[in-house]
Image (cartoon, rainbow, N blue to C red):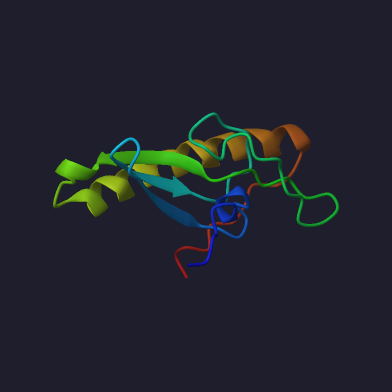
Length: 113
C-alpha cells in the first residue's frame, strides 16, 4: 500500500482528502487550496508552500466536516458539499479583503464561461 499521509500538507496539489480514522470512529473530510493559516484538522500546522516568487503560500488541507462511521447519512455528499461551499465563501471573502489591502484588482469570475 502506498503511504500518502503527507500529501494533504500540500493543499495546492491536494484538492480533497478523506481519512477514515478508526481510532475516533470518524470519516474526516478535508479541503485543499488553503491560502490562509487555519486551526482545523491534522494538517493545520503544515508549513506553507510558495509555488513561485511573490505568490501567496498554500497551507495544509483544512478539515471541513466529520461523519460518525457508524451513522454516515445517505445524504453525506450533499452535507459535505454544503460545508465546503460555506468554507469557500468565507475564504473568498478573506482573499478579497487581503487583495484590497494590497491594491490588487478584484478577481474575475470565470465560472460563467
